[in-house]
Image (cartoon, rainbow, N blue to C red; front, side, top):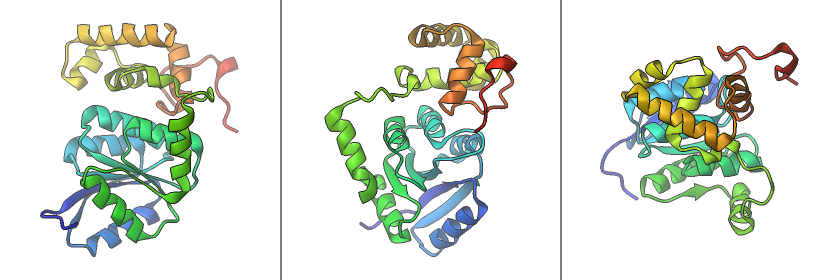
Length: 234
């Protein structure tokens, strides 16, 4: 497939050597242009909003948020961005949830650069791309449905409600959230009530614990958790 203009890419990975390696390889291809690098989930979201790239290579693991949660927020901001998830392991949960969150491709990090390029061309062309190691996982999920009991609790929420939930658990008020999303605070209040109803949770501490468990909010959230219930890092 011949591309008429350069594909604008953001590389999101918490390992500097990975970002530098990908940047160098993309720089050797005249059809590609790296417009940003992110080492945390929040940086990835901010850069996606700032640069509006065509493609983002998305690590699954960040120190502050997992790549699935980052992908959800990016899709809420700009669903036209093509996210290519990259992971060290073919973990069933992350493969399925990354696709559900909006990733258009999923590759393992031991793949050849040529395969990553093939995935980029596929997603730019409007297709999905799955490496061989994860294809069976996605097919099984489609055939078997969501009967394993491992469904993400946040799957009940809209993309905008997920963004609101994250900002709530960081301590932002409805007015502050509204200002950041350029909507009225009354609209945010409506989103808050709906997400609480969908999740069956009204307590901000319990909402924060859920957000941490699902990788949406880091453990250092501004909302204090009772010491006896603070999640332990194992």
